[in-house]
Image (tube, rainbow, N blue to C red):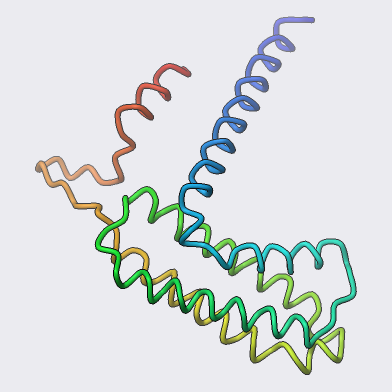
Length: 172
C-alpha cells in the first residue's frame, strides 16, 4: 500500500474508533437517563414500523400516541420535583427529545394523507403529543446545574471536563 493509502487507512480507523467510543458513551448516557425518557420506546416503535413501510391501524396508533402523551405528561410532573440535573445530561436529554420529536414527525408525515384511517384517527393525538414533547424539551434547561463562569476572558462555550480533555488531547 502506498503512503497515501496508509495515511487514509490510519485516519479512517481512528474515525471509526472515535465513532464507536461516542456510540458507547451515548448508550451509557441513555441507559443512565432512561427514567427521564419512558416514552421513547413508543416513538421508536412507531418509527420502526414506518421505516419498514408496514401498514398500521390508525386507531391503534392514536391510542399509542395518547398513551405516550400521558407518559410525557407524567415525566413533566416528576421533573417539577427535581432540583437540578447535570448540565451535560440536560443537553443529552434535550437533544434526545428533539430527535424523538423529529422521528415522530417523520413517521406521522409518512402515513398522514396516504392512509385514510390514519388521517382520520391520528392527527389530534399527534398534535397533542408533539406539544407535550416541545413543552418537556423547553422545561429541561431550567433544571440544568450549569453556571456561567466569568473570568473576564469572554471565552464562551461549555467546559468538557478533565477526563474528556485528556482523552481528546491523547488522540492527536
